Image 1: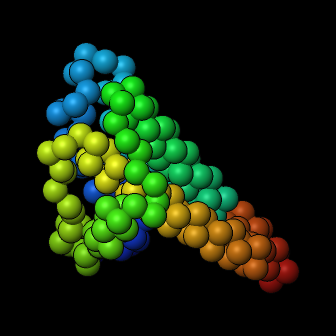
Image 2: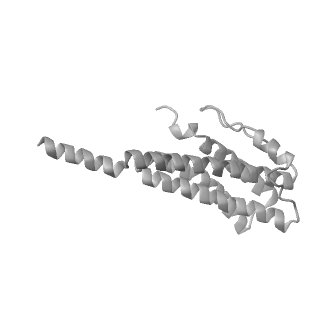
Image 3: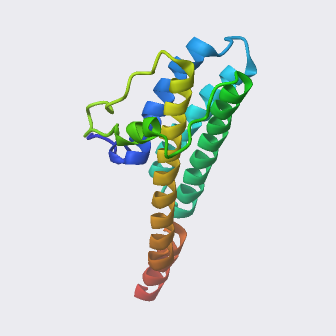
Length: 175
C-alpha cells in the first residue's frame, strides 16, 4: 500500500510540526502535572488527527466537519499559547513584526515519505510561543481554504449519500 494521500496535504504537514513542537514546548515550559499540559497536547493532536480522519471519511459532509474540528482545536491551542505569553508578561508579536515575517518564510513542507521539514524550537519561551502561534495561524488559513474547496466541490458534485442514492435509482431502472 502506498503513502496515504493526506500526508501530501500541506494542512496535515504543518499540523505534524505543530504537534511535534507543542510536545517539546510543554516538556520545557508547562508544569507536567497541570491540566494545561494535557489540554495543549490534546488540542495539538486533535488538530492533526482530525485532518487524517476527515480525509479517510467517505462522506464529504463529515470530512468538512472534521476539518472544522481541526480548525477549532488549533484555535484552542492558539489561545493556550496566548495565555502562556500573557500570564508570564511576555510579548505577543504582531503579524507585521519582522520576526513573525521570518517565521512565515520558513517552509515546513516536504514530499512524503520524508517527514516535514521543521524549525527547531527556540530556547527562548517568548520566541517559541510566537513561532507556534505563527504556525497555527498558517495551519488555520490552510484549513479554511481546504474546507472552502471541499464545500464548493460538495455543492457541485453532491455527497456520498447522494451518489449512492443515484446508483440505487439507476439499478432500479435497469430491472
